[in-house]
Length: 112
Image 1 (cartoon, rainbow, N blue to C red):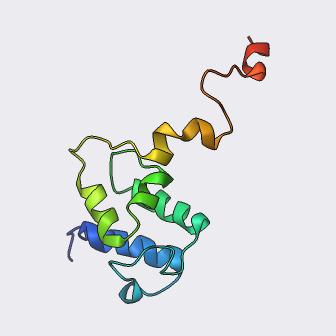
Image 2: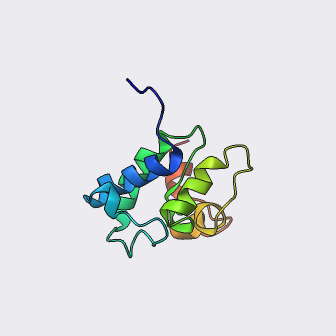
């Protein structure tokens, strides 16, 4: 019995295969997830599987920025590296939620 854990690229490829519902052999390593047949909902499926492969928190924005199997493998392999803040993941989050900088939300104030 072989107790070796599959290498990281094999695991990322398997996550894509599961989400795209294709055989592992049909998953391209250097093709954008969306060009390979994925969509934003399937990206979340991949995100959930990849989160189990690392101790590092992942966000959907990370996978948009690293959008190939090879790029996602490199992202996960860089566990010792500093967390890079992506435009969607950090600086622009408030505008994505329709908030302005310095704006007070009346809901939050009313609950106090």
